[in-house]
Length: 190
Image 1 (cartoon, one colour):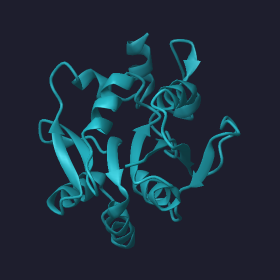
Image 2 (cartoon, one colour; image 1 turned 45 degrees about the vertical axis):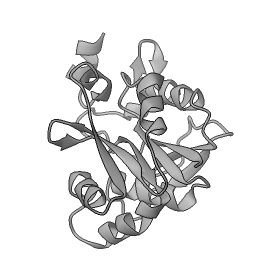
Image 3 (tube, helix red, strand yellow; image 1 turned 135 degrees about the horizontal axis):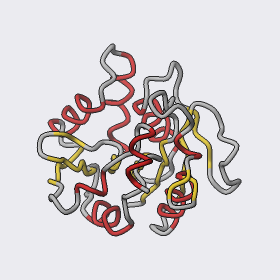
C-alpha cells in the first residue's frame, strides 16, 4: 500500500474573514505547519487541494484544483483521489493545527487493502483528518452529482460500504481534531 497525502485548503473562510491557510499559529502560517507535518510522514506525494493555486504553494507540492462547481471539501477529496498515485489518500485540513504526526501515523498504520480509516468523536465523523482508499473515488464522484454534499453523510455511506473503518477518538485525542474557524478560536489558542 502506498500513501499519498493532501492538504485541504479550499475553504472560503467566511467565518474567519481571511484565508485560514495564511493565518499565523505560534508564529508560522497554518499551511506551512501542516505541509511540514505531512512531509515528516514521508508519503509518496503531497497534494494541495484548493479552488485556485495558492501563492504560498511550494514548487515541489502538486496543486489539485477542486472539481467545479465547488462543493466544499467533497470537491477537493474527489479531485485528489483522482489525481493521486498512491493506493490511499491521507486527508488533512489546513485549519487543524493541533493535529500531530503521532496521531496521523497511527491512522496510516491501521489502513488495509481497499479500506481507509475514519476517526469518530462520539457519533461525529472527522472526515478532514482521515485516510481514504482509491476505491472511494466512485462513491465521492456520485455524491458530487447529488444534492447533499455533507461529508458526514458520505462518510457514513463509505463505512457501510466497507471502504472506511471507524476508529473511536479517545478523550485525550480529541484536542488534535480541533479546528480554527473564527477569530475567537485564534485568540483562544494564543
